Image (cartoon, one colour):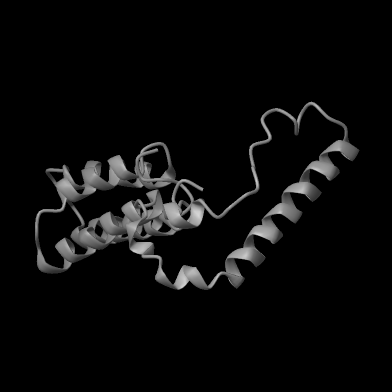
Length: 150
């Protein structure tokens, strides 16, 4: 919800906060809880789909998601690799953007690979750099629901 533009977020009426209710109730209670949340979500989506004012909302005003930050770092890494630029600061950026995720681990592995002094097999080294960057890109696609500053 935090990554939605403010104008759209203001039009959502359902509260999706459930606290500890999911764990403190029976299966019947859980079913009622999820039915209420699903019905509220459907009502909100139907109302948003019918709202003609949404055309005027600038969706570019929303905050960047964590997935977008990871994917942007991966794109810059690819561009630097293609043109022969310095990839180390970009790998550190990926490490920060994906901190706490597999993308962050891939970034730290890229930093380790790029700091190697003696590379015996440059083809294998290049393959590992591309593989880690591609893995970070795949993982980054799973984080479009989180704000980048989370």
